[in-house]
Length: 578
Image 1 (cartoon, rainbow, N blue to C red):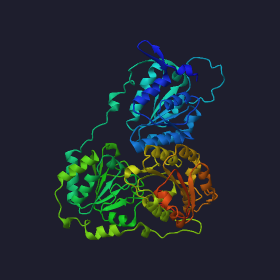
Image 2 (cartoon, rainbow, N blue to C red):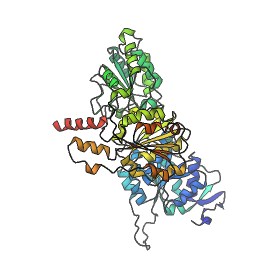
Image 3 (cartoon, helix red, strand yellow):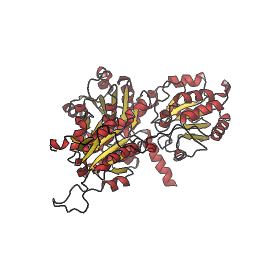
Image 4 (cartoon, rainbow, N blue to C red):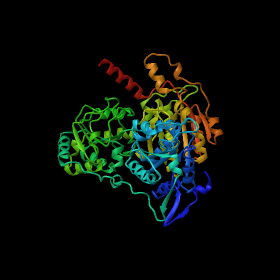
């Protein structure tokens, strides 16, 4: 773009600037200082304007990963994550990431280039090979689009898209090239076009109805072995202290969903995770429970082990959104309200309970939980050239920095999740919202950008890694505090075990044993290949105090299936029997 076009010119009481410059200034005024993307010819000038203003344009090597970076940044920081990519093939390339971002509840704005708006004109330049009905495709995928239909409307379209994204619904802004390059007058003290007031307001936490609290209290009055399940919603509501107090009041046990991992870490009656990632001590106690209180959790198939982990007992589900209650699992009592406030209301409604009426709160239970060792829950199965992934996870938990966030791609290797602790739910991120592999790397890069004071650990399988390997360059270029733990079973692990369970050939699901460590070193990582636990122990100093990005190619035993694989097969068999 000719530099003269970007010069500001006096225009009466204001300035005349290109639309892309005005939009960049509005983005800066909105408090956004970090942008992710992959520039294209139709967004290059806009991206350059953003970067030249000091907002920081952090480029990925694929559009999916650029959007995932924005989503990871939004999740880790609580701020708006913005991705800028191109039109046509770029939009199609990033559809995977866009759908993922739309399902996580993170605050994400995706800005796309768009073909010039010139209705009725004859195109004398030949076919538009980038022609693509982005609004229709993205709309069908569930994303709400805002279009800058004219230079005068561009700023209000941006403001409305930001307002929509701030509600936790990924929003799209389409910027036609001729609108971007057109000039508009901007007042000297101009602020961004005002967003809809209603869209800017976050509803205040709402207490539960008194009748619902009374019904729950009456149920608990008959219970002696209650279980409290805390989900990510409970954590985000700040309900941890209230739930722990409630557990003490009623003699209950505490457990979380996978996304709420380690919310109750250190509590003497913490059972860890319920469902597919449960350990044996938790399962034994959960089976004895006579009432279940669920706070801010959806009760999906992993939380319920495909319908088998939640005890056959009265279940109370508390959620701020009425439509979430009973969506995946029947609830006997529905309580609509904020998780923290509902827990506090229950504390006020429930009397103190005698110790004899708290059979779970005994020295025997406390001591058994304190003495429980995850390593006793399985028979380690290393081979001459591979390590047991569960043993690997336990050792990594000791060696990784304490101040860490862990981002997981998807696959059979997710069975390692219970063995790696985090400071709390804000520090664990699952990228399974679109039930796909390949979104972990970009998400981890966004996490690392948002949290430079700590270390982000990406746990990824070789299938997902091979899809996104180019982002090694991004991590090194950005000098991000990232440790990549490649769970390398030389296979699409989930598909491998699925085929084995059905006694079908597995050859198309397995890969050659490639050593990826030298590849990572070529991009600037400190890298190592792990074939036994001693290989990992030798890296202890480097892992505790990482200096730059680190890559571990961990060769894991492909014969070890995660528990949820067997649960999935059993659920399918039940469904087949009708």
